Image (cartoon, rainbow, N blue to C red; front, side, top):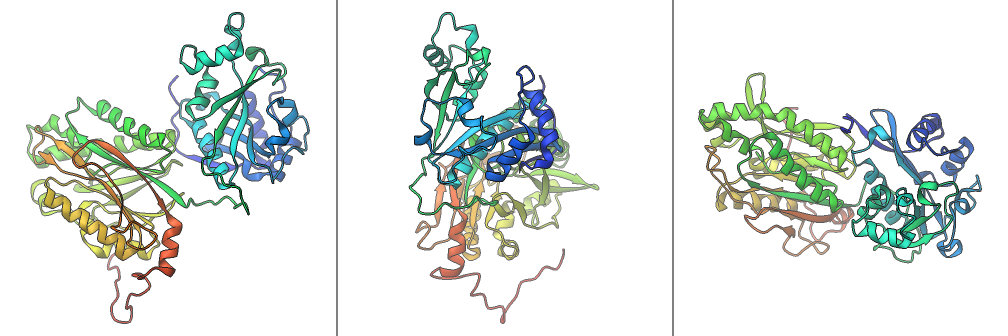
Length: 512
């Protein structure tokens, strides 16, 4: 079935006002099971005792899925338990705020919203909640809905082993294992009336590798402190058309999302291979043909940002606006919203060969990982732009670039490192590698993608957090700690932002 196209995704805490919509969504998801929905008093009690454990995914204003959780003392609960032991008490007295394990009591995605990886988003939220609350692990009893097809030949243990080896397909177990959960033991008589599973279940567990015995449990934060960046060092190559190019783009998005990255960034003009079809035209005409793809590519990348639960920075693409050619890109947030940014300074080559014009839009973007800014390639060589963004509270500056030679690359790299120091922020750069012999004015590319930091005691001495192998197609994954920037602003060995002589000079915008 073709996945449903949606415009907006929101993960939010469940409220009692959502009950009727939740009940309807639950019945649609578990249609064949008796008493498959929660009673209103049960939902109310869950919200009262553990509000951050009860979340729903809203798709264009509808409940598309739900995850319900409690905290338990697992030693007291024990491995040999049933679903009734967890849920039979409508007041959920088994919930223990001082417990050590997050127990998943329900998760579902409505049938008409399946195929968009929304289930993985719910699992990712639980993992982040587990880490934020410093709990040992996540556990739950996983159904085996296809076991009844093999029960006459296989024990539950044998069935699980064959599922793990991909010899048997079980949609629930396969999904849980693919989300890094591992089987602990078989639970007999776990869910009464579950004939498909023979009333067996698998105790599944995800271990929090960051767990430490807490002195005090932190509260979950709306804005992430540790942000994981996924940079795509894109290989320029010939493509048969849009579908092949988007297939390659999705491959990389899937790869960085698999590492639970918060951002994926493509390079400047990563879609340039599509110009090969128009190589018989003049350079200005060819790039204007390329500009016709920008809207569709942006829409498809936005859908992928929702499906893979990752914010995507689309690098840049040519775009025609009222007869003028701009170099633009888009921030596709994982909640479905999309915002545009422009290249403020086009290069002499872009102006001379393509007739491209300067943009006039510069601003920071609010994300679930704080404020970010985007400057396209040459713009990073003008310190005024990043300083204006820094004054608006930017924590991470993304620089998609395209350079043909090492000296051009060095300009971008060295300026990006300077921007990180002078603005006390992180700077991530991503470029393309390889050759395009069938596209005029795009013959060769040189890049080494990297993440740069300020230079102080809490950061790498050389200001380089991570860097890719030069001129090799690959992804670069790096974590950056936003809290370290806050410390630097106040306690750094030098304080570039605070020590500016505003009594002596100032920077101000001419255009808004």
